[in-house]
Each structure stands twice: as C-alpha cells, then as structure tokens.
Length: 152
Image (cartoon, rainbow, N blue to C red; front, side, top):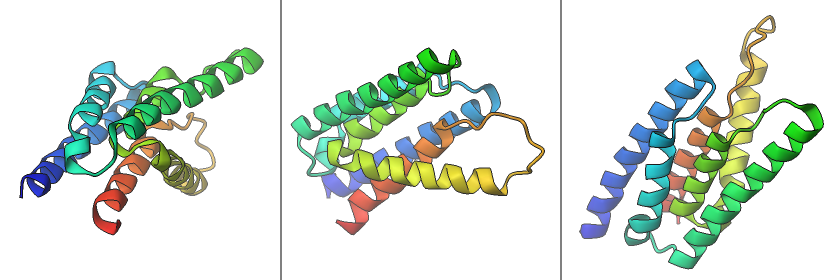
C-alpha cells in the first residue's frame, strides 16, 4: 500500500515539475535549476522506494545522463560556437537517470527524440524559432516513468 501511494505522489510531483519545465523552456529557452535539481534529489532519495530500481543503477543513471548531454553540448559549442544543448537539458536527463536508472536513459532519449521530431515536422515551416529540447525530454521522462510503473 505504501509503495502504491508513493508512486501516485511521485507521479503527480513529476508531472507538475515537467509541466513547469515545458512552459519555461518553450517560452524562455532555459530550464530553471529550481525545476531540475529537486527532481534529481527526489529521484535519488525516494524513487527507489516506489520502484525496484537499485540505488547504484540510479546513481550511475544520474552521472551518465548528465555527462552524456554535457559532452554533446560542449562538443557542439566548440565546433559551432553556439549553445544548442544546455546544462538544463543535461540536468533533466540526469533527473531521468536518478528516477529510472541508467537502463532507461536510452528509452527516455528515444521518446524525447521521436516526439521532438514529430513536433518539428508539423510546426509551421516559416517558423524560425529554435526548437527547445527540454519539453521533449520531459515527455520522454514521463512516458518512461509510466512504462516502469505499469508495464514492468
């Protein structure tokens, strides 16, 4: 009973923070630390009680998620002198690793990439606005959380 109650509370918490991330990133092209850092902390502290994902897997997921996106963003910036993948995106990916473990990071990235690509193809062609990746990471994070809770 405790595990189900905690899963419900964490799900609503995740939905609220991800909605906040989506709204801010669409509008301002940035993700506030007040939205991403608590998700990392909650993932490391509480998600293990709601799921059977081991702490070691969640710690590896946190580090791997952050380092992968940081490295890609840094490499792109050095080549193009333009920041396309910021630290906010890296922190959201780290939060996904903290909640889900390292083995779900590829699923989060797949869901995020596919939903972002779908949006990019249906948005007006005349739109010159850069595509924020944070909302799609948040969507991939949520979909993977539901997959972890309800499918497995």
